[in-house]
Amino acid sequence: MLRDLGLKVVVGPHALERDRYLAGSDAHRAADLQEAWCDPAVSAVLCARGGYGATRILGLLDWETMRAAGPKTLAGSSDVTALHRAFAVELGVMSWFGPMPACSTISDDDGPEPRTFEHFTAALFAQAPPVSGDRVLSPGAATGPVTGGNLSLLAALCGTPYQMDARGRIVLLEDVCEAPYRIDRMLTQLAQAGALEGAAGFALGSWVECGDPYPVLEEHLAPFGVPVVAGLPVGHGSPQLSVPMGALGAIDAESCSLAWSIHNRDRAP
Image (cartoon, rainbow, N blue to C red; front, side, top):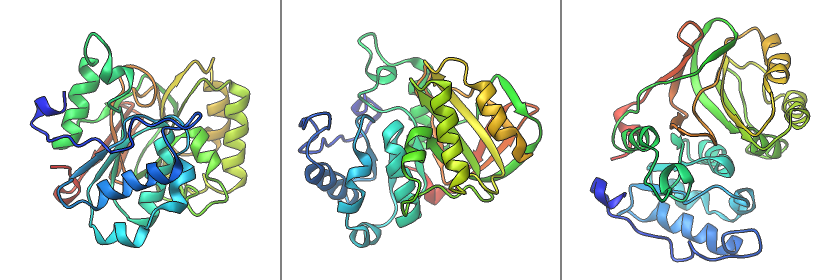
């Protein structure tokens, strides 16, 4: 499908390996990522899927060498939240939080989910359109760089060099298969670590198989007194739309939307 878009596709040499619950050893996964990022012929690195273990490779990457390679595009979601955070801190690049080639919204036997693939394609080649939700937990409007991602990974990064800093930023949050009490615990952890302090607003994605998380989300986020829009098709649901992490974002409770502005130099070719 990617080749049909006119892209030349190179698969990492260890992409199909297995190591227990991981997609290969830490060393091999880190090597594949760094090699792709530093290859001048590569303009975008697409994570095949989320899964587990992204946090394990952060200390194995040669950030100085990767900085010297210059900016390019990283795309992925779920566990890849760890890479989004590390790339933001270490490389200062924008990255796309969205579907991955091995996810059902792209690789379903009947073909990719149309809205997902259309939005993903727009993200790769230009500026994807805004995303809209279906409920407002706190009114208002705000602008700021977009940060965040998968709630479980953001909680796991607390106390590390890649802990989220929400100050002046719009925070995207989503998760899958987490009961409300676990969402409560993770939000409490982020709050107690200071990771949510000073947020400009919150954009809440999908909460697939999470029961009814909205009472807990509203309890934790509404007291910040900033706009909170929810029900965005971003995360683990279908459709699964793409959001640029690090881009200047804008949320508007009136339209229940998250929009953004991307400079040409930040766009993937």
